[in-house]
Image 1 (cartoon, rainbow, N blue to C red):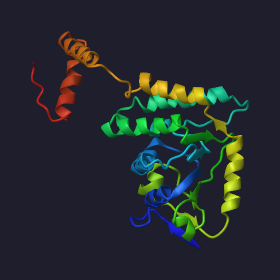
Image 2: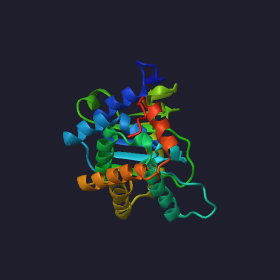
Image 3: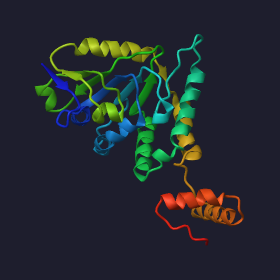
Length: 263
């Protein structure tokens, strides 16, 4: 038995993933691209499971097959196909992409702070594991190992089709995916596991480096009230000493709907 998922309002992949994630004891996702925006869409479902103690070690395995556009906030900056394979270089590209993404204005939002801390927690606790295929892979495969009463009704199932693990792929753009319930799960899981075992993994030192980057080098770093006050005072003094172009300031105030008074 199969079901089509087209991202119409009543058949969005986001809605189906949220349902299946809440009923699964293990998740294995192979995608071409993986963006932070996708995890943000699934945040509430995963957070509830974690609070209920249902997220275990290696509960979520995400295998990324292709390069990630750094401008779209990739949580895992993937490999370029190099003539000489250099694992350290690939990891450094990943770390640099995190710094770039989480110093951007687009992600400097209140809800992002809580979400990032939650997913860092999952990484640190090894409940979320991310790896990169050594060779480019275009497949989109979502495997769900079900649990509880639902398993008595449905066997383990998988979804395959066109959707990457992105906000657009989950909901906003037209896609075509098939949910397969009655055959092929074992073969699909074997395909995933073979790639997973050969993939580039993040070790404990890498995870600690990611946490340090967020704590020290992004807008998520903690700032004391005195530091914030001193920074605002510096900006104020710079404005009155002519270090900030007045023309730019007037334009900014006007665009935001304020009257640019001299004081």
